[in-house]
Length: 542
Image (cartoon, rainbow, N blue to C red; front, side, top):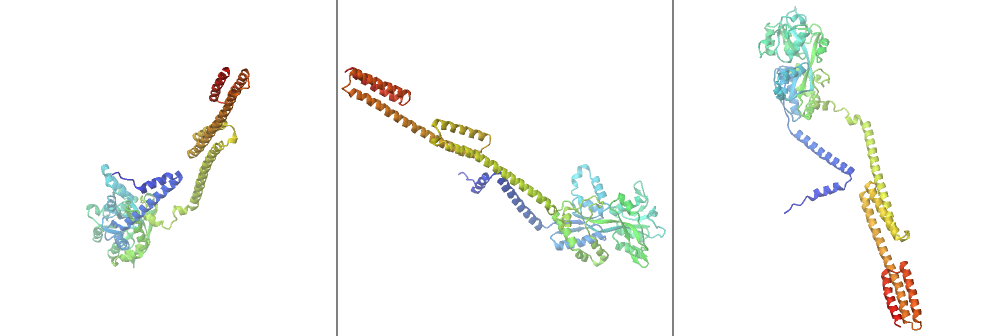
C-alpha cells in the first residue's frame, strides 16, 4: 500500500509557494531565529544542570596561593554546583605544564614568568608532539601581589650585588627561581647563563621551600630568596627567630623595561617586627601579580560564575581561611581584575570579561542612536523598494488593463465593420504578446487579457456568422422574387411570345447585375438560371 505524504508538510509547502519572495524571506528568518533561540535555551539549561568538575593546581601547601585557592574552593562549591579538586604542586612551572597538558583546569601563577614558561613548555615538545599541548592559559583574576623578599644574616651584606659568591637557599626550579635569575642578571651576577652564586637547590630535584628554610636556620646558606606576599609567616619566623634581615631590591622601574610584569613596591618599616623594627626603614623591592589562570577550553559560563562568586563573596573567602594563616586573610581584599597589558603575554578569559563588563553597556546600547539610524534607513529603503515593486506591478496591471479594455470594446458593433474590428483585435493581441516578452505586463495579466481576447473573438465570429446568415437570407429572397417574376411570365397568356422573351431577358440582366453586385449568391443565381431555362423553353414551345 502506497504511503501518503504528511498533509501538514504539504500544507506548509503550499503556504510557502504562495508567498512572495520578500514575505518568504521574513517567514524563514523568523523560523530560523525561533529554532536557534529554543536550542540556545536548551543548551543553557543542560550546562546549568551539568556539574562541572575542575582541577586547581595551587602550588606549595604552605604558600599564600594554595591557602587562598583552598578558601575559594570551599566558597565556590558552597555557592554553586561547580566541584573543584585542589592539587599541591611545585609552583608556577609545574602548574602551567599541567594546564597546557590538560591535567589542570585552573592554576595559580606568577605574572612575570607565565610568558617565559609557556615558551619553554612548547619548545620542549617535539614537533611531532605539538598536539599534546591541549590548552592555553587565560587570566581570570589577580589574587594578590607577591613581593621579591631577600633575607640575609650577615650584617656585611647590605646590597643585592654583594651576594656574589654567596650561598642562596632557593629551589632551582619554578617561577621563584626564574624571578631570582632575572634580578641577578640585572645586577650582573649571571655569567654565561649561570648565576655567580651558589644555589643550594641545584644539588637536588627534591629541594623545596621548607628545606631552604632549614638551610638558612642551620647557617648553611647566607641568604634566602622568596617571592611571597607581604607578611609571609615563613619569612616572619626567619626574621623574628633567626636574626634575619631584609635587603632592598632597587631599580624595579629599570627592570620593568625588560620585564613588563615587574612593579615597584615598598616593604613598610616594621612589617615583620615592631621593636626593634624589621625592616629598619621602608625598603624598595619588586612586586608581581599572583594570578588565577584558567584553561581556554573551560566553558565561559563556568568561569563567569567562578569570577562572580570570588568578587561577590570576598568576606566569605576570608572567613574560610583558618586561623593558622590569619596573615593571609587581608590579601583577599586585594583581589582584582587583571590588567589588559600586564606583561604576562596572555589574554583575559572571555568568561571573566563577561563578569567584569556586566555593567558595561552592550554594543547595542552604546550604539543605539547609530543603529536606530541604520534601522531607519534600512526600513526606508525597504519601504521604497516595496513601493517601487508595487508601482511596477501597478504599471504592468494598468498596461494589461488597457489591452483588456481595448479587446472588450471591440465587441461593440458601432465601432466599425467586422473586418476592421477583427484586424484591430489581432493587432491588440500582437501588442500584448510583445509587452509580455518585454516584461511590461505579467504572465497573470496576459492570461487575463487572453480570456478577454478569446471572448471578443468569439463574439465577432458569432456576429459575422449572423451577418452571413442575414445576407444569405436576403439573397434567397431576391432570387425568389426573380423566379416568381419568371413564373408569372410563363402564366401570362395575354402577352405575345416575342414580348415574353424580351421581358425574360430583361429579368436575366437584372439577376446578372445583382450577382455582380453580390445582392444574390452564385447558388441563387444558378437556381434562377435553371428557372430561366425552363421558362424560355416553355415560351419557345408556344
